[in-house]
Structures are given as structure tokens and as C-alpha cells.
Length: 467
Image 1 (spheres, helix red, strand yellow):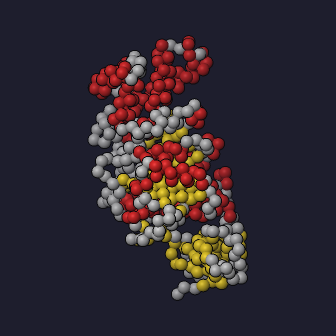
Image 2 (cartoon, rainbow, N blue to C red):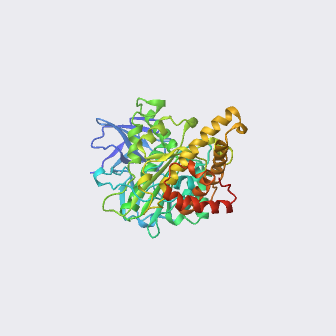
Image 3 (cartoon, helix red, strand yellow):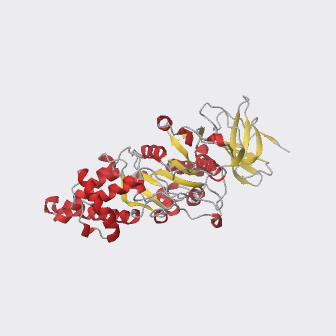
């Protein structure tokens, strides 16, 4: 039996309090009828005995303590799911906003999802090619992985996200789709995402969820959960390989902090709630591959580090949960290198099991190790040059400096170019020909004979100075 509760006990910001409520459930959805005949949607966020606190999505402006009528729906927030959802643009709650009509659901699912049983997980293998050399070669994205991008305010993470959506793909013949969720973005940024995907003709494989900066914070908290619910349906019901891009997780965490503060919870580090770690884990751990299913869910959460501080709670806790990170560098961004990926602090912990013979190419792992090692030596040479001047460096260090400049300008700073995996690996070898073979100590002789020597001729043709 559905009961209608008339009147409210308190109104505090976007929260309303009802008393005398029995059999309500945490996260249960409610509908509220106002005096003017309009209705609003809310969610139960706190239960204390027969006292119930409801967060109203559209805010409490114009609500009456005496006459507001509240009905509890007996179910949590649900998302309508159907194969036709591909190519649609939804709001932060999963409702269509593209003017193409309603989604006629095959099923409806709880946005909170369910954790994947570790016993049911399949170890992630096979890579997702992004077309970006610094990621594909040095921090390879593996199917079923969660690999965040750590950026900073004002940097080109939105452009990078669009480029990944345009270029990302898996092996030929396998179904691939992208769920793109933007949280707390301004109208011009949302329009940029819409136009970019439309101009690139990729919307037919994208489901886009947009939560704007002026939308309610409770909607922002639900947006990534709605996106992951859509992704799980496409992956495990329709057997597709799904890449989920969540931007910007900092907006999500700040909404969570505001929501926690409004409930009067005791704050933790920098004002964020003490359960921030477990809340982020409930999102990130929904990535993976299930035994007996052909599909997969891969995540790229994008977050802007406040003050470029990688020890801030949001990137800090994200790094604990996820399997690596891609870090963007502000100094590279300032001199026009795009994408400004900082190679040395970036890593993919699952990379070793999804590259090499049978996955990408046999030389991928040794080439990646050598590029890392050589670029690390470049930083030592730069530090020395800042003290004694580049003219006073040894011939070996001068070669390293020259290698570092070309590596940053051509390999990392590729611009909006879509490179195949073979093109990326071949370019890596061409750059290594700037260094003497004797200095390449991370690669065995058989691989050097097969790839280093032929690369010398290609490097000369491309104007690269061979050692």
C-alpha cells in the first residue's frame, strides 16, 4: 500500500525532513507534489527511526511545510536501458535531453549497481588502442583496467578526452562503444563535446551523459553511477567492449563534500567526507571483465588536481584504487606540446600482461623500458646543464639532450594525429637511433638486430640524426 505524506517537518537548503515515516529505505526515490501542481523528485539520504531526510533534486524553492505531498516509490534511482541507447545524449540521471524522444526500456536497473565478485573477475588482457603514442607505447590501456588521467585546471584534458573518444578502438571485428560522462561542466564545454563528437561522426558508438555546472549537486553524485550502469548493460548484456570516460571527478568529489556538509557529517582531510575512499572505490571497482561474458568495462576517470597537487586527497585516493595513472605536465602544456603527457610519473600497472607477442608486438615491452630509461637520463642531463650550461656537457649528455628534445616534440607532442600501434613503435625505434647502440642496455641483441638496425635507415629519411 502506497502512503501519501502531507506536510514537512523542516526545510534546510535542498534537504527536507519528514517525521512519522515507516518502512522507508536508504536511497529510495520519492516524488513530491507542490501547491502549484508541479512535482519534484528526491532521494532518501538519511533515516533515524521514523525521521527521514530527503534530498530534493530540483531544490526546495517554493515548497510548503504544510501542503507538500510526498510519496515513497519503494525503489532506488533507476535507469532505462535499451540497445537504442547508443548515440543518445542523456542528462546526469540518464534521461534523454537530445530531443529524440524517450527511451523505451528493455530493462530498468538500479544506478548503484553491484560490486563485482572477485572470484568472477577475469584478469585483464588485450589493449585498447587510443592512437596516442605516449599512452599506447608507455602506459598502455588494457581492457578491463581503470587508468585515470591526472590533469590541472586550464590544461587540455577536455581535448585529450575528445581525441580518445574519436580514436580509441579494440581489435578488428569486436564490438566497441564509449560511455562519456561529463560532471559539473559549463555550457560551452558541453557544447564543445557535443559538436566534436558529431563532427567526427562517432556519436553512433557513444552514449553521452551531461551534468552541467548549474544542475543540482545530487544529480552530479548520481551521474557516474548512471554512466556505469549503462556501461554494464552494454558490456555484459550486449557483449560489447565499453570504455567509460568520467570527467571531471574533482567536480564529483566536491559535490560529495558539499552534500556531506549539508547532512552535518564530520569532515575529514580538506573537508572531504571520511568515506571518500570507499565512495570512489564503489565507482572505480565497477570496471572489469566477468567470467563467461564477452564484454568488458574499462574506465578512464579524468580529474583536475587542485593546485596541481598530486598529494591532494582526490588524486591520492584515486591512485590507491586504480591501476596506474597518466599525468599531464603544465610546463609541457605551456610550451605548446600536446598532449602534454609527463612520461616518468605515468604508468600502467597492467600493461605488461596485455602487450608483446600475440597482443601488440614482441618488441613493445623492451622498447618501452628503453624509452623510459633513456628519458630518465635526459632529466639528469637537464639538471646538470642547468648548473654548468649545455655547452660544457659531455658528448654523451649532449646526445641525450638532443634525444629528449626530439622525443618531446615528435613522440609525446604528436598533436591531433591518430597513430597505429606499429607507427608508434617504429617511431620509438627511430628516436632511439639518436643514441649509440651500446647505450641501449634495456634491450637484448636479438631485438636490436631486428628493429634498431632497420630503424636507422628510416630515421635518416625522416631527418633524424643517427648516432
